[in-house]
Structures are given as structure tokens and as C-alpha cells.
Amino acid sequence: MQQNDDIPVYRLGATCDLSDVSEGKIYQGKVQGFANFGMFVQLNDRIKGLVHKSNMKSEHKEKDPVLVRVRGIRPNGNIDLEEMTIQVYQVQNIERKSTIVRISDLSGRIGKTVAIEGEVAQIKQTSGPTIFTIIDESGTQNVAAFVEAGVRAYPEIELNDIVRVIGEVMVRNNQLQIEADMITALTGDDAVVVEVRIEEALNARAEPADIPLLIKSDAMERLRPEMKKIARIIRKAVFVSQPIILRHHADADGICSAVAIEQAVVALIRESGADFDAENYLFKRAPSKAPFYEIEDITRDLDFSLKDHIRFGQKMPLILLTDNGSTEEDEPSYKIASVYDIPFVVIDHHHPDATIDKYLVAHVNPYHVGGDFGITAGMLGTEVARLINPKVEPAIRHIPAIAGVGDRSEAPERQRYLELVKDQYPEAVCKDIALALDYEQFWLRFNDGREIIKDILNITGNTDRHKKLVALLVDGANSMIDDQMSACMPHVVYRELPSGAKVFLIDVEIHAHKFTFPPPGKTSGEVHDRLCKSNEGSPVVTIGIGPDFAVLRSRGVLMNIPRMVRELRVEIPGGGISGGGHLVVGSIKFVEGMRSVVLEALIKKIGEAQVQK
Image (tube, rainbow, N blue to C red):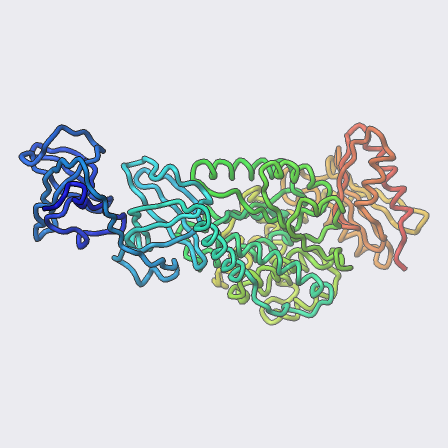
């Protein structure tokens, strides 16, 4: 005769299904709910049965533990139970061992129950289930867990936890999804083993392809290690579902650099197995009005990121700056971002300040390897984009030529990139595309205009629409430039310096149309181009003057604008001086009341600069 303490009571593991249930055996259960005819009892999250009211022994409430014996299993899978009252018994666990499946292999397991292990990259509460985004060494997968509509499932699971998920592989909206039966946070050695496995695999996946540059360039060849480092960081951010914010200067060169990278990153997000909308919440491209990362920019980016972190359970972003980010003007924004431990990488060709690199994870800048601003951000960004995702090269290989022409580069790299695409994009065409970008971005303001910009750059492949759009924009831009120049040129003031340099001043505040295209910086550049043509062979400096700023353009005068700004800041107390840019193209800001003092001191410094023979 069997003793009471020998009576076995079985506890079903989370992965067990109906085949693990046997008639006549006693199981631990939990009251799920009630009906007029009896009580429903869960044997685990996947299996439940009915205790008819005639077989209930005592009063219960929902979630009470209860012992039940299986009276029978019907052909349709319904289980008939009866309540048992046993004081002493022996619990035996029934576990179905689940082999851990890689996320990349889930497509062959539709309709089957699987186990995956990985890191929680996002937790998004919908009006129905809670969606956990899990990453492992092979990919990204959404897991749906449901308690009741709009209620957070598994509240103990947090962002960045290492977890084991058990559930059925389903297809929802033409995408794979796991419907979770169980999500468990791993701890101790179990978590470390998975974490190390994922980290090692992700580092290997993130390693960029070893491909040559599009052109020969000694300076860019010396930059390859840092370019590969940035590509590696960006690739890994994609693989771990870390949002990426790409900030760029809102001119042709900055747009070219950013759009090349955008194409590479968006394509990689799609390839990595993320859901259909991932490219819209994991990547954002945003133009910056100034050629540096303003406090207004970091404020917008922080607001955007913190809201998404709270609302959608996203990680804080990686921020990539291109055609800005290298100067001390960026430092106040970096300091704010450091409070939130936001990582930054920079691709820039402005003259770098030594104080900046301590805020950056990686920094590609030609000045670091003996180059200069002639190697433009668009050239650098395109080469980094090819390292991020070589598959996008056919769509972006013409972009460096447009960037070089648009930024008036005089480096030998400009001609090499033009040679690369001369059959489809000769220099005149590149110049028109660059002007169209500047013109369109002026009207876009802070918007990225993603699809319009792609048409201007002919990335979409609709060449007929591209040509019509560029022609239309160029006509509009040239008409407005001509109108602006007809207003400006009669008011240009000439001063010759002892060095032989010719300085031309135009007050763009009172002698140019405001709040329209071209803006003050481009207006000054257009004035400068005309003055250079009419003073061929002479060193020319053009200063576009506003109430509290001046824009500088130089040909043949070897200025160092960032150094001049730093010196004037010390030499003119109360001037409120800031600014910078490239060595011979840049801007300076000051307080309006000190305008004449600052301008005279600035012109004096220009006169001290060496003149090219």
C-alpha cells in the first residue's frame, strides 16, 4: 500500500504541452477563473482544464494554488479535472528540455515552440500585448507577451536584461514573431555566458569589410583605421537596436555626407531582421543650421530620445555628427549630452580643436593626418557608408563628386571623384545638383526632406524625375541669386591692404533681401565668386557683414579663421566674440554694439596674413 508521503504530485514546466499530461496523475495548478458549471485551472501558462462543480472540494478565488487529478483528456484536447486534498506528497518536476535556437534560424520553426536567449533591446507597451525586442548573436526578434489589453507583461524584465524566452513562432503582418509562454531573466554565470557569446559574435558581425577606397588618396588612406572604427560602431549600433541620430550641416556637402550614410544604415537595418517600421524609429537624420552642434540641436535630440526611451522603451541613441562637431563651439552641447552618457562619433573637415576629442568615441578629420578641408565631409561620409554597407555603393558613388564641387574643394581628391563618374555626372551636372540641394534645404528648414533629397541626388533611380526636379530647382535658385546680386553688388565697399590683398565688404543686413534664398552666408559666397572673377590673379577676401556677425571668404590670403577668432576674443573685451569654420572660409559673431571695433580688428588681422604668390 502506497504511503501518503510517497504520493507523487507533478509540476509542469513552462515548455510542457498536452502530450506531457497523463490521465490519472495529480498535478499542481492555479485557479484561472470560474463558470456556472465549475472552475478553470491552469497547469502551466499553456495548459488548462475544468474542474466540474461536482468535483470541487472547497471554496477558492482566482490565482489560488490547487491540486487536481486528470480524470480524462477528450479528443478535442479539453481536460477534465477533479480537485484533490492531500496533506503530504512528493513534488516531481516535469521539464521539457528546449534547445536554444538562434534568431536567424526561426524562419524554419514556424508553428513550433522554441527557446531563444538574448538581450532585451526594447520594451514597447501597446494597447494589446507587450512587445520585447530581443537580440542575440545572429539577429533581432520581436516577442509578444500578453496579460490583458494594455497591461505590461513581465514587469520584472528590464531593458538590457539577458533573458531566456520560450514561446511559439508565429507570423504576424507578414513578419516573424514569438508569442511568449515564458520570459525569464538570467542571472549569474548563466547571464555572463550568454552576454559574452553575444558580444563576441556582434563584434565579429560589426567588423567592416576590408574594401579599398573609391579613389587613391594618401590622406584618406591614413584615415582608414578611424573610418573603419566609426563604421564598426555604427554597424554594432544597428545590430543591438540602438537608435542612431545623424546630425549634419544643412549645406550640399553636409547633406551629401549624411545621405550616403543614411542609405547604408537604413539598408543594414532592413537586412538585420528588424520589424518593418524599425528604420523610422531607429534612425533619424536631422540638418543643423550652423556648421556646429548647437545647444538647440542637442536640446531637440535629447527631448526626442528621452520621450522615446520612456514611451517605447528604446535605448538612448548613438549620435553621429557630419560636417560639424570638431570645434570648441560644439563643446557646450557635448557637455549637456555627457550627463546622459550619449556616445558621439564625428566625421568632419573643419579645423579641429584639441579640447573636443575627450567627448568623442571616434573622430574622422583630415587635419588629424596632415590633410585639410579640401577633403570634404561628403567624400569622407561616402567612404564610411561603403564600409558600413558595401551593397549601397552603386547608389552613392557619385555623391563625393557632388560634395567636392558644392563645397568648392581645390584638393586633388575632387578631380579624382569627378573622373570616377564623369560619364553620368560631369562637373556641370554636379554643380547643378549641389545648388539644387542648397536651394531645397533652405525651404526645408529643419526637416530632412528624405525622399525629395533622394530624388535630387538620383538615389531612387528615377533619372527622368531627377533631371526635371534638378532643372526646376536650379532655375529657381539662379533666378533668386541673380535678384540678390543685383541688389548687393552696387553696395560692395573696397579696401586695399598693405599686403596687397583686396578686401571687399558687403552689408547683407541692409543691402540684401532678408529671410529668403540665398541666405547671408551663401549671398556672401556668391558676391565673393563674382569679385574673384573680376579681380583675376589678385588675392581677394570678401566679408559679408550683419548686425552681429561677419561671414568670410578668401582666395589667395592664407588666413586661419579659428585662430583669428580666438585671438580677437582675448584682444577685445566685451566683444562677445565667437565663431570659426575652415581656415579661409568661416564666420565670426560679436555683440552688435562692438561691430565697428571688431570689424576693424578683423581687417587688420587679415592684412597680417600671408598672401599667396
